[in-house]
Each structure stands twice: as structure tokens, then as C-alpha cells.
Amino acid sequence: MRANLKSEVNRLLGNGTIVILDSLNYIKGYRYELFCLAKLMKTTNLVIHLDVNKETAWQWNATKGDSDVYTREVFDALIQRFEAPDSRNRWDKPLITVQSDGEISMDEVSDAVFAVQRLKPNKSTQSIPLNSSNYLYDLDRKTQDVVNV
Image (tube, rainbow, N blue to C red; front, side, top):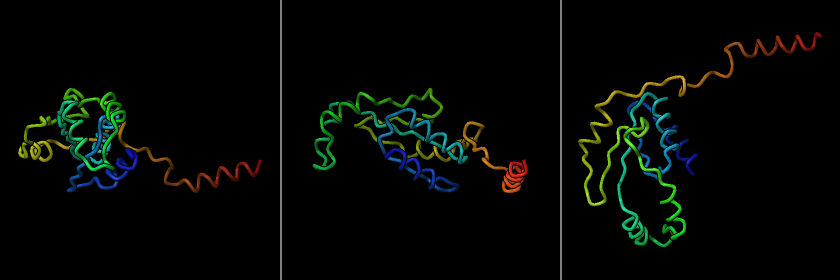
């Protein structure tokens, strides 16, 4: 599922496009991958974390429709694996934390998306061309060398 979401984000990211990925981004490595996508596409990245205690989250889960409810076992496993965003990590910056009983500041979100410098790609995010521009010529030449030996 995460691979499909990442693929869809990759497809949709671009100039003038805002992509909101509302998902269980509870693994910091996955948030890092999304950060690298944003960096590759020279756009901004924002993490919004809803800070809610385990008991409240379980109550919310119990009020969902039958098909969407996590079992207690799955719920506890998700809680155990959860890696909270940390503003000290570059991939979690900017980080807006919203308390479960609080409201999100849309001005803060707007500033985080539009009033910051776009991410710049570096060697770790740029793709290296797998083939040179004269790939077919080189392939033909090497094939002829093998045949002529």
C-alpha cells in the first residue's frame, strides 16, 4: 500500500500542485522517502502530526464503520511501531503538531507551504541516466567486437 501511495505522490508532484497525503506515515523512513521525492521535484514538504493519546485513538477507532475498525491486536502493533515526527529531522521539517482537542492554524500551514524556500535536489535525490545518449551505437560497436573475435 505504501508503495502505491508513494507512486501516486510521485506522479502528482509538480509545479503548482499541492499533494496532501493523509495516511499512516508512522515510519520515519517512509516520511524520509516522501521528503526525497519533494526534494527531487524541487518543491516544499510539510508534516502535520495529530498528537493524540492511545486511549483517545482507540475510542476513535471504535466509532468507525465495522469494515474500517482495527482489531486491538493490529491497533497495538501500529502504536508500537509508531515513530513520532521530530522537528530535528530535516525530513520532518517543517512540522506542525496539532493536539487532538486543538485546531490547526491554516496561516501556519500556508506559510509552511508557500513562504519557504523550495527544496533543492542533490546527488542523493537525482537520478543518474542509465544509458548514454549514444547507447545504441555503443551497443552495436561492442556487439560487432564480440562477433569479430
